Length: 125
Image 1: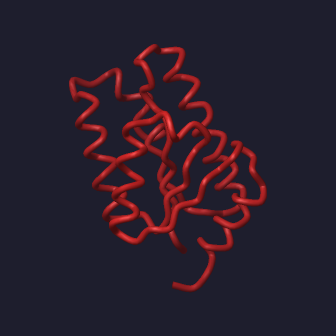
Image 2: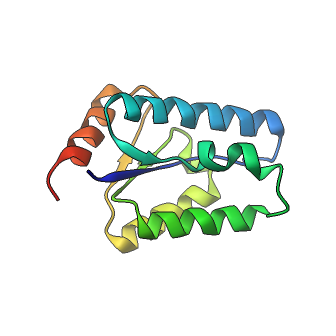
């Protein structure tokens, strides 16, 4: 099965309420993908709870995500609001350089695009 990398706003302006909302949105998409049996990596849910408990800075977590995108991802799934995210812009450029397909969600429950991602993820490599 192919692996989806969920990308979208995370830190925003750094306000904890904004970060929590961004994590919540990403988690909703992760749930939608899991319900479709799509393997995924979601930086928001993977690092969200530890980012504020560690001495590592935002750059460390961006590099971590970059490494995972390069090594593991077969497609990039963009959360609504991706246009506002500097980190996501960089992930899009990297995905384009690597030839990784990109799926643009209009909403967190965009069934049409989520089903396309599932079809892609379950297709033979």
